[in-house]
Length: 222
Image 1 (cartoon, helix red, strand yellow):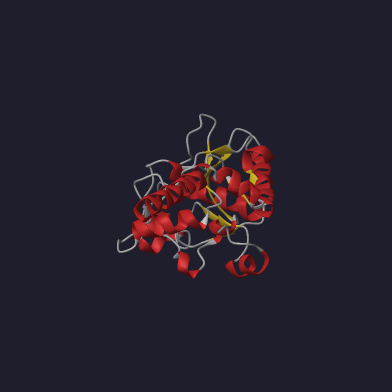
Image 2 (cartoon, one colour):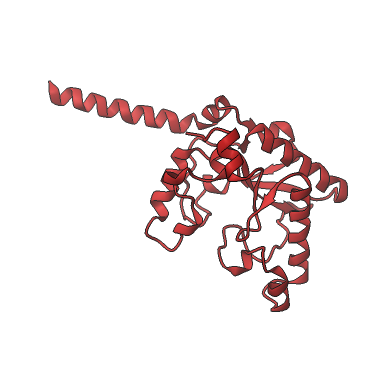
C-alpha cells in the first residue's frame, strides 16, 4: 500500500511539473508580464530558446510561446520600435528573448555548469539576471525581407566580435565591416534613446534598468 502511495505521489508531482511547463504563458501573464505583440504587432518575435538553434543546443522553453516583458520594459521596447520605424520604415525589431522564469534559468544553468559556456548564464543562486525580472530583452533588426541586418557576429556568439566596448578596434582590424559597425550603432542608438542600457559583451542584449533597481522595484519571476 505504501509503495502504491509513493507511486501516486510521484505521478502527481510529474503532472504538476508538466502542467506548470505547459502553462508558462499563463503564469507569466498572471505575474504581470505583458505580451509584446499585443502592445505592438509590428515587432517580430522569434524565441530562440524555444528551439534547439541556440548556444545551449536544445530547447529550454516549454510552454512559452510569446515574448513577455514587464510593462515598464515593454513600453520602452514599443518606443524603440516607433523610433526605428520613424527613421527606417522598412526595418523592424525582432525579439529573440525576453522575460525568463527562474525555473528556466535553473535549467539553463544546469546545462552550462562545468562547461566553457558557464559565464554566459547568470547563476540563479545569485538572483539571476534582468531577464528573470522581465526587464531585459535580446533584439536585433530585420530588413524588409525579414532577414537580420549583419552585425558582425550571430546572436549567441560569445567571441570578441560580439563585444560592444571596442568596436572601433574590431573595425580597424577588419573583424567587423563598416556596414556591421553602422548597424550596431543604429540598433544601440534606437534602444538607448528608448531608455535601454547596454552591456559590454553582447550587442543584442539590452536592460531596461540596473540590477540594483530591479531588485528594489521589481519582483523576480519565481
